[in-house]
Image 1 (cartoon, rainbow, N blue to C red):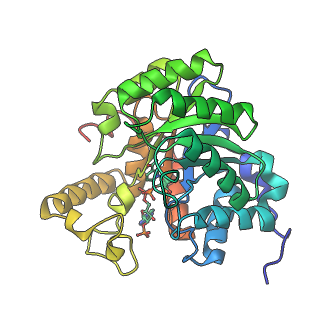
Image 2: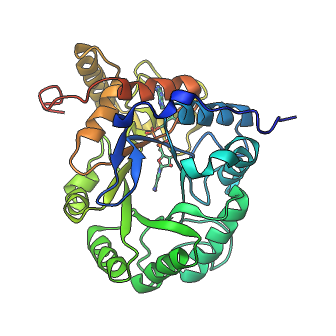
Length: 329
Ligand SMILES: NC(=O)c1ccc[n+]([C@@H]2O[C@H](COP(=O)([O-])OP(=O)(O)OC[C@H]3O[C@@H](n4cnc5c(N)ncnc54)[C@H](OP(=O)(O)O)[C@@H]3O)[C@@H](O)[C@H]2O)c1
């Protein structure tokens, strides 16, 4: 039986102000490292492990947890885990947490459980709130661009969600630049400014820089949160000596073993040499690189154990890397 109300967060959790960054030109401060629930928090994962990871995060000032309707597996179960955590531990600390969720990808069967319609976004958020046992989320995202739904419909749904008090802020994830520009202007005109853009950014995948999205966010005062900053574990010591049992790649789901070509292995080994020369870990270098990029507010990591999270948060204990240290990466 899980005992409720016995979690006492570390008193010193807010001692280091430097671990927070302003999200664009908003009033919101986000931790420079945020925790995502995509993997490791679903119905097939041990609840006590998920619980220990979130406790460790919150105890170290990590106030932002990122979810989506279909995180699990099965779909919806990461939000159910969040709901259990709220009930068991975090209800007294709700106002200290910044919780996001999203809708946009496949969630339930039929024409209304996918993409960007008002029907989908509105009903999905209602479901998410029930699963997470929350009255509102801090941030609700359109999870992806839908070329078949008028942008105005998706964007107006975001506006109305805020007006209905179901989300405090809205965000956009994985939209192309032109649609992002349109969305930014649409939301601004309706006094529901776009808080943040969520996109994949890491040493191996620099698409938001190449497409101009990161520059646009920086220029317009929109925050940017970089997902998969460790390239799902590639940018750690995880895969330097093969494919560990139980790792994401060993499960052949979102990270395939075919990704790990000899060329990529060489790149990882030379990045690891760079990290060693700086007397740090590859994961720390990877997070530091992301946070050094113009316009980035937070690196949104995942972790399958407290030890991994601890390693990743270690970046926050030191100084940011200098331009010289990152030269050529
Ligand atoms: N908006 C979107 O479309 C989108 C897409 C993807 C992700 N996201 C968000 O971004 C979050 C993070 O994504 P991600 O999980 O891909 O991030 P990531 O930090 O790049 O990868 C996390 C994985 O890397 C491995 N890892 C992490 N730290 C490690 C360490 N110190 N040593 C060794 N291995 C380590 C673990 O893999 P093992 O599990 O193998 O141990 C862990 O599950 C998600 O939870 C979600 O919130 C959003």
